Length: 97
Image (cartoon, rainbow, N blue to C red; front, side, top):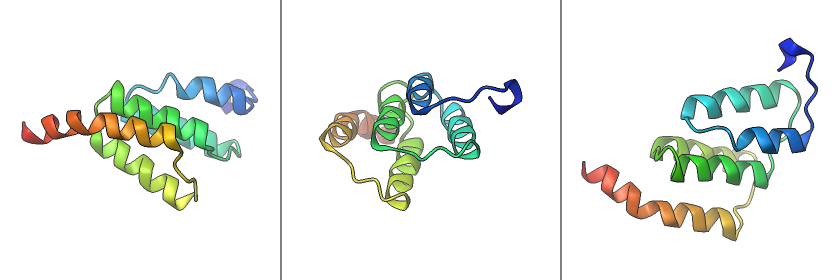
């Protein structure tokens, strides 16, 4: 983004977070977000966790995002908890294979 002289605001990043469908895209998003001085918030983090739970089915990515929330002192809300809880049956199937 910085290469293209784009100055996104928090709403832009919220929209961009919805497009992150792979762990690599999440990593790139977070790097860009941080390099532009963004501060992760609960809504963006919940979106990223939701994508990794419901779209990508990537437990390691979910774990990394949850650890990030602890490091950044972002307390999970009911929506975030519900997303992760709904992912648990899929996680169990992934672990069984």
